[in-house]
Image 1 (tube, rainbow, N blue to C red):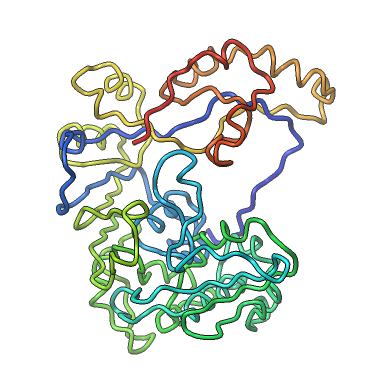
Image 2: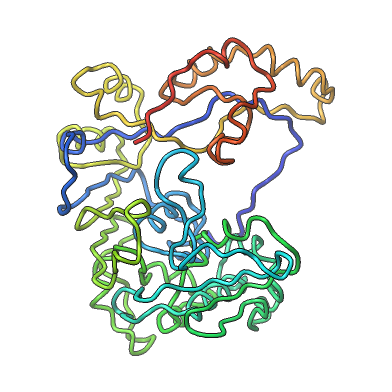
Length: 411
């Protein structure tokens, strides 16, 4: 699917119910306590299909699970995040850049200085330069290449040039280690946007073969910058576009295998961002969620990206021998009930406020799955997303909210 996917704003008032979490169940081996050792293969069952929105091409990919693979394993950006739970995981930190830049020119210019020694994985095997990031941004600016969130960058000077196949004038590369972004007006969130995977460096020597209608085919030959790469990357011939073949480790209908990137220098990264202990990851599609969880329980898989059947969740939540293998991961999201402002009685703000007061939040959470569904929310924005600045904001506090609910234990 290559159409643009935008956030849709409905004319509604929102009633926050519960901060949702992701539930994962680890195998017996992953549940053991002790020192983590490097090596081995981390096997993951992936329910139904990969379902990527743009065939795993980072320019257009907009699926959360794909972004997780990029950010944790495959793609580095000028700035990013430490992969830790809570508010600390939402703090911008340097990645390819030597530091998080302070804007100049009245908040309209950001200058990124790149680290030395960061290379593309095979088959490219060369050091990343500022031009590789500029190329990725210009690729995103051209709608023919399938970018699904290019609208986040329209305040870069000359962004509209991309649609004409011309360079975006607000992106400058004065030298191989400097990237300058010029905006039409000050922006407080550019750094967050520069942490999105479409801005990660892309090598022109490979991606030039995947433009226009063929753009998303780059997902089969994605050249990594992180600690892992698609299996078979080193065997790809890039002397000409005709010689390029899909990497052997990625079959969109069956599996994705990632192996260590020999060009990755751990000294340029941090363990908080990417700890990369396994030697490889194998993600295997299995349409049967029950089968996935049976394999996890038997030790044939270490993890899953799958919906948890109620009986499995109950079993792992209540069996003392299995409980330690149930992990509740903060999802930084909120499930809520909407009220249509165009319909009576919800066109009256007092009715909407009353609804927030009278809802039995405890029962709603119980119906949703109880404590495993998450904590009762005090407002619609997850606290961690604003670095806990709203953690004490409780406009509709009731006994159901102010009670000491057990918070999910981050994985």
